[in-house]
Length: 377
Image 1 (tube, helix red, strand yellow):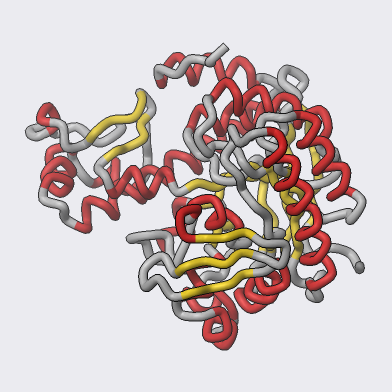
Image 2: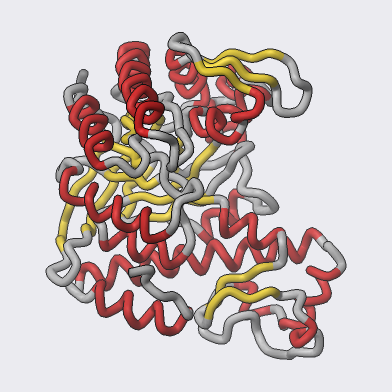
């Protein structure tokens, strides 16, 4: 394998917390880390146009392999120049592998050594996805960063099941590694699974490291376990993850989890939470999460968050946002999505500054107090 298309440069270790500040180098941009990536499942961050995504992100977003494979088809996306050309996005792009659907569509799939037999989540038509197919689809989607095809089992599966699952994920990672041909343009990350068992996590990581992936993802967290269980696993993984490679915590994006994740050495995050919550009328603010449709905001002339300088907080009053949410107006969803993503982008910038100034634990304590969060132990 030639020099990877994506590599991570650690520039500073927080003396207070051990968190990492660095630069993620990709073919379509360099990004300060830790970074949060908005999710653009269907080659769109729901309700926002690409120009708006630029304003509320650091320029690296995620798209979903499974959904784009089904609609419109990865070869069609390829012919538009990949997801970036398809959606007119000039930033960088990461794609998942479709492996999470092995978890989320558990009622309509069957796992075999060859791959996963699905039923289409809408039509019920039979489908099949293998590690090799996942890599080919992601090659067509043209992401800068791709994920190995894995099984994401429920966190509290029994040990025997998880051991078999981890070993299958390792075998699938090897098959995907061999199938990948665009190493100079697209980086492929390995995914560390193992549920709550440290020995399985270490075994998975040890085997993946033999392949020398350009980066490593942590899967199988934020899938139903408690925050205490997630945080304790992150504390363990911090001690064994390779120092010179980017570390990506998949599917995690609540503000408290971003802070704790950064403390535990995570460089990359993604989650649908900010956009999904926005579509249900929920906003992230400097004084905690609020429900915009609450009656107390009906006549409010205050901004959504007086401590936020985003476009929404500068130009719209709570009374108007309250009306839009209650009326199920798309504009309300758009404005709250914009604000929530801007809030997380700003939070990540504060985290990076705290790391560089060796005060991330102090920042955590102050932030948790303002937001009403508590450490679970």
